[in-house]
Length: 106
Length: 394
Image (cartoon, rainbow over all chains, first blue to last red; front, side, top):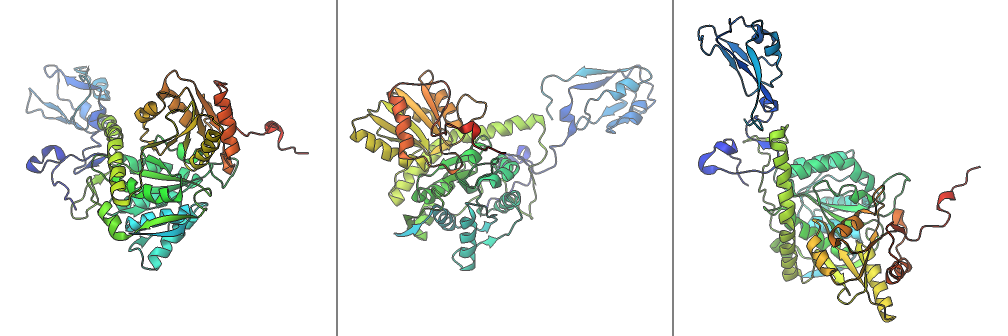
């Protein structure tokens, strides 16, 4: 009986094997980030790190770190659906939704 | 070595599953398939078949169990018919999409409503686009042989698709015939033990199977199935060629009977093919140049072979055992028309709900073809004149 590859099929080196049909060795398939057609883009110069976007994010994918003033707002792209709530609630209006290019790939 | 025994179509189907050494059986009895479930249960009780027999509460569960069992790396057996097949519909898609190469005898019977127990092809035609291969048997012998051929094809690494072996209810399922039943050693040589080429369930090494698949992958997985169907004819023909070497019986995706010099040919599926050939012999004796083209493999559809076989035939008819509601003609005729391009193809519908397709039916159809009276509409052969007033209620 064939042994299932221990690693995901895209990352298993010598034992690389491609299986057909809906199967996964890690639970990657429901990463909701693949639904995204637009993504939030933060103009960090105007940002005051108030955290309103983080509080309102329905998927809880926003991290705000005041210490890193250059990149202080992070998004988890695996799970950000691009809903745009962060851009709507931002009091400084410094988040814009920009289109993903082509088919979103994880 | 083979022994020649009297078997009906259901008996031949259960012998086929026994010889394929299925290890798990989850079959729910339904007329006219019940004897398959019963005989497989007998085999298990008598020790002729080393299998686990699971009693399930419906056909939906029967297919669920079969898929789960086969995913552990063994052959699983089930069989169904008509509304049972319809109840399986959801899970048939799972078997096809998960690439579980189950081989299932389908005893063709009408779909409701009107309620009917008897034969036609509406049940299988309703599943024709579900990702299952469909082979149609003409005789009890073909039922047994096609099951073995279907296993070889379905389990091939290039295919990995489930397959239905369709046999006409009662006409095949309940009529006895002398069938050559091969011995186990010969079958073992033709059909090696099941090797799972794709994913399977292993408690020591768990995987997610049939997980929610986002749009970025879904189309690609459907495309994989399309590629498998593209590769299936080659594998099927190899399996048939090997079958001839081992068992001596000749099979092909289509069988052209007296088509070489024929002026009119009727395309058939399943048990009606024998009647059609008999009618052709009778009409040939009267000097009429007619022929029959039997389709054994409806999925994958042998378009190229059909086109080649009918290239020189002036007039073609297709006898369908299912109505194609709202379509121009019934399902098989639709596809034959597509294959033959501009050539006139007369669609016939007959044999619904167990009505016999007799030599007289074929004679009528051939006469229509030979007189070149092709109509765009489908011709319901044998339909009664009073069709719209048959039930008078006072």
